[in-house]
Length: 240
Ligand code: G3P
Ligand code: CA
Image 1 (cartoon, rainbow, N blue to C red):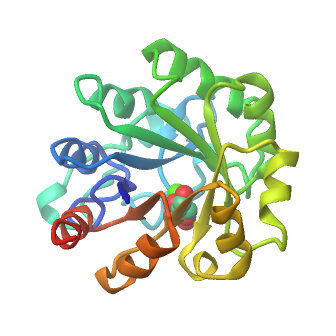
Image 2: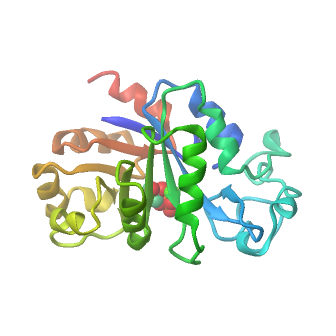
């Protein structure tokens, strides 16, 4: 079962910062996950929330601020003073961290609250500039965005994200068409997901931070997990 560091190594470093991705890049794990939004001046930045309030010393929505304005804020101190001065990274900067590694990179397109026009095209362009087409997984809670990715880049792995499950998820998958399914931990052990795995769907589960959950996920045939605690998960899995 593959491990993806969720928002970078977010248990020990401020989420979605270069510090969190550089730490994850040192680990022998399968990949990382990150979240992308669009600034007022249409730059791709890596941050989870629509607003910068929770993870910086500023406030306001990413969509209302330019990259230059966003760079003025501190995205590390909220987590620990040790990380004071961490800046919001661009997607380009985060992709660059993995230039010399083999990690897969799951880029989540955060288009489900605010609509960012042409976000899909901009992300694909950035992926192409690194020639990372075989390494990325493009996912979103916005399944229309995933469908658009499937049309624009049919060879790139895509994945709709689910908080709750649709009944016949394997058939639903074909309508997008989606290459993988990213499901919540509570949905993972329910029959629609179990059936989808039995029918050959690649399923990854978010967000798994307790090792007690790992045995059952392995048993049902989950392909990978997203975790804030990659080292803890690695250590547990090493006993399998
Ligand atoms: O992509 C899986 C997971 O990251 C989705 O939830 O809220 O952490 O972006 P969230
Ligand atoms: Ca995410």
